[in-house]
Image (cartoon, rainbow, N blue to C red; front, side, top):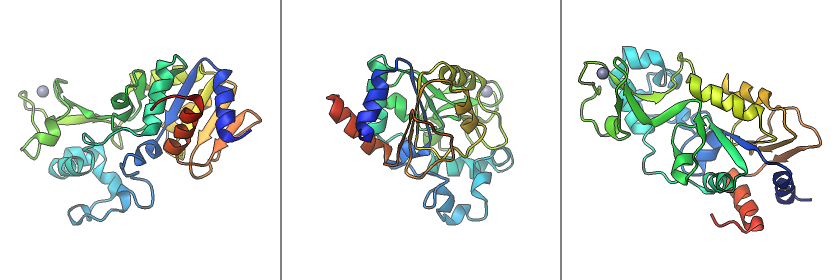
Length: 251
Ligand SMILES: [Zn+2]
């Protein structure tokens, strides 16, 4: 059996499918993977050159150099005009069909929801949500991107920040709990577009006790496989497009 046929066979024998995804899911929509060779970390923007990329995504930067933090956020994290690709669309269809119970994503771009997915655990938060770091009041998704002030301030005087997990910060507890519970009760887990090198996120797949494991990533992963593991080394959007075509699902 080819990879597409095997994938469909796994699907037909499963009722609780969970997808765990990373940056590779969004790169096909044109969002750079900031850990890849030509991603954000290697872009040389004169203004940011003096800072390590990790610093620009850190809690320290937000607190100690907020004007730099927000300039970086506005330039690099604004994905409002980016469209979901066939990977996002196929996963939304899989949920609609009652097969997929949850998506666990390390991405902060909201593209799964844009494609129509409902149950999405964003374990690194979302750049499309903002809140006041002092009083907790929430602000609409355009607020920081459209704000003319270099440091967006709440009426209470606190700094308004994106609801994303920065370096030095803990992961959102509700999302993590939901993600782990979904993975633990899944009978099929699809890991896609992630090199599983970002912790603790990557460790959540250890909770999987189901039968079928599918890994879709262009480079090989260091993960234990058995006879019920399918490894697909293609671009994830391309693979799901083939699966959808084979299943007669319109994306
Ligand atoms: Zn406030």
